[in-house]
Image 1 (spheres, rainbow, N blue to C red):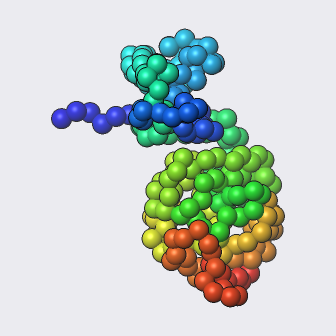
Image 2 (tube, rainbow, N blue to C red):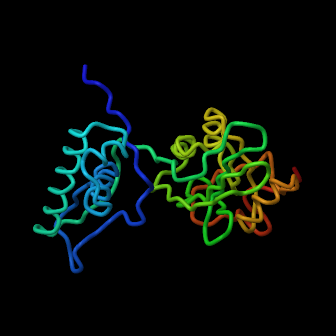
Length: 236
């Protein structure tokens, strides 16, 4: 049987996930995130293939194969008018650029469903998380990361891979709650307002949240009739 593919480390999720000719395109070409990472390391960061292999935690031949595949796809799109889609692959985010926090009481990595500075109100549809590293009750650093189009149950694995241990969100369904519990991620649902303020309130012990929050809809709106939204409120 073939050996399982080893996860390749990538620095971060890309800001853009699709590139297409201005007028029209004749089809799609898919490039994986680990292929894209070799282009970033070799063509933008100007590393050698040996250095790129160390960065990604793989062998040099693996980097060579990924890079050659990525370059062929780029050439195909440019020469034949295809749309390039960045998706998939075998990868994990390398959080080495974030502060390393020892596992002791008072240290946390908190994620907040995020949109325009506020707590986004549907966990399964969130496009971004804002991630905070906390030590001794103080935020050391925060960073906004894209979910790369993942949703619902897959997001628990995304957060676990990012070493998140605490989540603040708005509405969240029962399936996602079960997935978070299985991943060992504590969550506070039914939170509204500014994301930074919510994190500060959690650290101060006065976060307003709803331990019985539910969100069973999957539409764009978040209201279920006048005066009713996803989740109520209570105090921590």
